Length: 165
Image 1 (tube, rainbow, N blue to C red):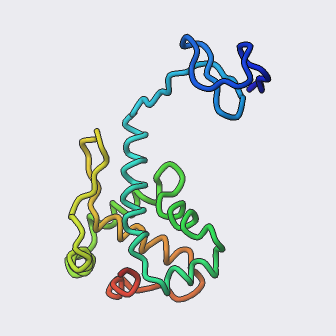
Image 2 (image 1 turned 90 degrees about the vertical axis):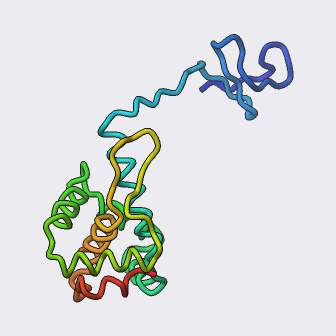
């Protein structure tokens, strides 16, 4: 970016000029660009996973948040979401597959938690047909939490309700 002094023979400039130059309030000029948002399938899948994981993570109780903050510092939420999703959604996809095949008793425990928290069964993102199961999102965050607190003893699936409020 070039800083403009006296742009266009004036003391200051802001806004757009003929769809070729854009001036901001700081006095910088840049070329005009139309933002692109291709909404590819992969991009939408990642947005859905991020929204679902964040929906679950925001329900962690204060004690568990403090535990993560003590272990990971002030960026504990970013570390938790990174561990939940994994590189190219590997951890997310593995947790979803595991959730789909888990036993009825464990699955009912997770679904009871979702009901207790009064959350919808599915999570959606705009302009994307596929949805994420809320229970699978909570299970993915549960697994990530257990990986992050290792070597401390992990929380059992029967006690998943102690993690979230």
